[in-house]
Image (cartoon, rainbow, N blue to C red):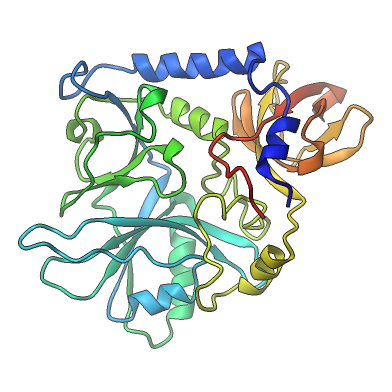
Length: 357
């Protein structure tokens, strides 16, 4: 796999194309302006934008066999909760992972939250998933439960929020304090610092975050696509997406030293071969969108008409495309309906590792 530094040098428009600069500036302004303050003093310390993610849902997995049960199904180690300090609740832990099918393709992407009741020694876990496949994931877990002492149940008591700093400079130096209680869990997003924090709560998110403001969900997805972070079945079609092409290793979502899990063989072989020719890249559409939009799976072509990948999903003029890494310097385009062409530019996120296998 080519070094991300090489990819960055090949990506068009890094360091100054007017279109990319304007797009980031517009999103920064929207995050900064936000809507009315719900609590706290917006002038005191960092101010935060809170996005309620109704398309994300939670499953609770608990019981004496919960940890070994999940380890046999997930690509990553489990975020086991830390020890409790006196009467204080144990610190929260979070991790990112995929469930794979036997062919090694992604079924479901999840953020895991390690929990421990104050007086219990057994660990339990909350699994954040795409709400449209919550039932399917629950059935998937039931299929492999067999005789294990594990309970899998939907957990509608807590809602999922994303928390992003309104100032991009605040990423990586956020003053929020992690917390874990019966009514709220606040923890850093385990995928990348650029995705801020995750908040699980029974209450309104902005009320729990100092200087918190309610954000527009459109802005959350714009930010996420600009960062190249896939989330849910639109971005990671079940049985289609390959985990390493989906940058699972970049997002701290796979362990190559853990025990066996379903779908491990292809993932491990690809990693040890060191060759990943295609990746999910953030893309920016440079031309006005056709009224019918861009269909998922639309071919991405070079100027000479060579196919270099497929458009995966997006919102507005940003999205994700699975592209051959050596071809992203473009110019690229998508052939939309009625023969119309939509130019696009791919980029390499700043948070990707500089050197990678």
